[in-house]
Each structure stands twice: as C-alpha cells, then as structure tokens.
Length: 404
Ligand SMILES: Cc1ncc(COP(=O)(O)O)c(C=O)c1O
Image (cartoon, rainbow, N blue to C red):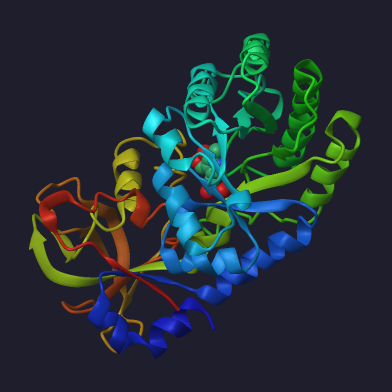
C-alpha cells in the first residue's frame, strides 16, 4: 500500500486528525530491511533526531536497529522504545554535566571534546563507576578531496596527544570506540565510498596513536534520499556495505571492531506525509492565497526553502534546514480523500501564523478545484519535519502523528 492508498482509504479519519503527520510503516520497514541487507555485518543506528515519534522508534528497535541519540532526552526516548543500552550511542557537541549524569551507564556516550572527556572522568569518578566511552574525531579532510574545515564537532587530530594523556590519567575511563561524520545527504555513492576509505585510514591512524584497539567504529551518516523524484537520482545502496567492510578489513588495526553507520532520513523521510486542512482562500493584489492550518509551526522545512529561495537562485545547502529547491510536492485532496482536479493554478501557499514569512511556497501550482476544508498533502515529511518545526509558536495545537 502506498501513502496515496493510505490517504485515500482512511481520508475520513485523517481529515479529523489533521493537521497531522502520516508515517507509512511498511515503507519504513522496507527501507530498514534494504539497508540491513546491504550492510550485513554492520550495525545500523537510527538517528532519532530525524523523527523521534515513539511508535516509530519502537518499530525500528524491533527491526533490530540501534539508536543514534543527540541529547539525553533522546537517550531516554530510545530506552523507552526498547533499544538496548548497548545499542544506543549518544553523540552531540556541548554536553552538560547533567547530560552526562543522566546518561552514564544507560548508553555509550561519545565525547565530543577534550573538556567533555575530562568531565566524563570527573562524573564517573564521583559515581565510583567505570565507563566505556567513545570519542568523536574531526575529519582532517572534506568531501571528495576537499580540505578539512573548521568545525565545532569532534576532537581535532592534533589534539590526540592530549586525549591520550587525559585517558592515561583516568583509569575509570576506557576508550571503546571512535566516531566520525562528514556530511549528511552525500551527493552520490562514489562520494560515500571515498569517505569510507578515508575514514578507515583516519581511524587506523588514531587507533595506532592511541594504542587502543577499537571496540566500535561509527562511520556516521551520508546515505541520501531523492527529494524530487523527477530530478534527483536515489542513491543506490548496492556495493556500499561491501565497500565499507572491505576498507575496514584492509587495516589490521581495525580488525574485530563493531562497524556502525548512522541513518535518519533514508529510513523515514519519504515514508512521511504532512496533511493540513485548507482553512481559507482569498485574493490580494492579483494573487490567490491558500491558507492552511500549521505552516512554520507544523512543517518548517518548506518555509525555510521558500525563504532561502527568495531572490536567491542557488542558496547554499544548510542541512537539515535547507537541502535543495523543489524538495516538496504539494497535493490537494478533497475531504473524502479524492485528489482534486482542475487546471493547476499558481497560489501562495501560506500558514495561519501572524507573520508573512509563514509561506510554504510561492506560486505553487495546485488544482484549481481547491476548496476550504480540503487537505493539502506535503511530501517528504518523515524526517526533520515535526522535530524541526516551531511547534510552540503562537500557541497553536501541535500536529498529531500517526504510524499506519
Ligand atoms: C552526526 C550525525 N549523524 C547522523 C545524522 C543523520 O543524518 P541523515 O538524516 O542525513 O541520515 C546527522 C545529521 O545531521 C548527524 O549530524
């Protein structure tokens, strides 16, 4: 069943719930299965920040994935959803002492700086506890031969000597693995293959320097989605798992490490649709405004795209806020789920917040039959959608979520 079938067969129920996010369970399981098949022998961590909806997390935990948590709260969500503590990896910059106290012992904490390693030493000492920790490294390279960039993430390679000293002075800490992430939504599979090769080289250097055989090596994310199927090619998974395993196997320093990758959007993005009712239609200075319930406070990413594109033919990629032009399709359904017809007309598709910035799209072509009470369906709403939106703005009721 496709998302269109789901919307058509359950329109009445969904109309009553909208604004809401509808997530297609079968599609998510298909994506997870395809990734597990290609990356057999490699653990797949679901990036909770992409979509932390509890039933969706539980679905992925039952499917055998681990969790990539970006806050102490996400660690708790992952535990509640049924992920085992050994399969939860907590990686984020700027963790506080309280974050570490809340999560130590219930996941693998990946330290993002030297100060954080010191703080972890302190917290585990105060608790009389030993802790196996990971460390995120800052890559000294960019995408496809580009130079490394200054970054707030990870520990720079020139600081590995200090890291070794801190770890030597803290016997309560054991370095159990390394983490690297260069970029989400890589442009094509060759870029990801090259990245795996360079990451393995860097991991091997770091392990030799730190004299620490890695328990795990986490290669981060990078598998992309095709936001616009007419224009973009979907990154094929074939050969990626093999490339990762082969590169790791070439280096004796990395033998026997648990290999991990992270993925958010590829698992859930295309499985999600945002459904929001048309609440008003009006004309102003020659333009038609279609007003829906919940724009920036329901699905912020199309609003960012509209802002990024205003008078700017090629805005810079700003993940996860802005990926590319034309990332979202807007369809209109009658309240009974039938797609609306009629010649397509350009409209200003706007939300009902008190700001002109609350625009989902300028000159969006939608069926001319559109009427108040219809539902606008926005594609690619499974990742960085609800979790990235201004839900509290103006005090509207936040959109609901349904996993079907
Ligand atoms: C460290 C890290 N891991 C994983 C992800 C998930 O990326 P994606 O949703 O593109 O798979 C991100 C996204 O920003 C990230 O920063």
